[in-house]
Length: 142
Ligand SMILES: *[C@@H]1O[C@H](CO)[C@@H](O)[C@H](O)[C@H]1NC(C)=O
Ligand SMILES: *[C@@H]1O[C@H](CO)[C@@H](O)[C@H](O)[C@H]1NC(C)=O
Ligand SMILES: *[C@@H]1O[C@H](CO)[C@@H](O)[C@H](O)[C@H]1NC(C)=O
Image (cartoon, rainbow, N blue to C red):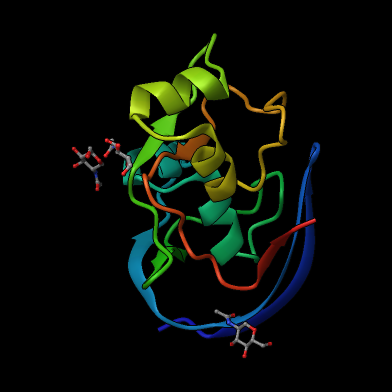
């Protein structure tokens, strides 16, 4: 089980949110392999870029400190989005939401790292496309 405390202000381009949490309840684990990147793990394991960063604060924002054989958490029970889309060239939030059959507002609510006008998504980034709002605790979009 993972148990840690965090207090962080995470700034991703223009999507800004703050997090204060003490957390337990990891329900999906992953052992880092040689050559992994955060987005490759996210795409292969159905985890959004936001969620992976949120629950693994020891991984730095550039994701250049992953270690082979390190165990990371993919999802916390009760706040685990497992429905995702990997951003492709030419994608917009509107077409991602439409293809997933969800409201644009739901897409933005579940991906607080994306700015409200969706100008900061990048190819390979993984977005949560669940049709419900994931109740990420203690995450406040500011
Ligand atoms: C959210 O914050 C409250 C109050 O600080 C704390 O008791 C609770 O453990 C936090 N929840 C999570 C999941 O971090
Ligand atoms: C990821 O989601 C897809 C589509 O639902 C599914 O086919 C695949 O098995 C999932 N992979 C993992 C590792 O959960
Ligand atoms: C998402 O929810 C809306 C409203 O309940 C529904 O109309 C739509 O079909 C759902 N989409 C998917 C992909 O489940």
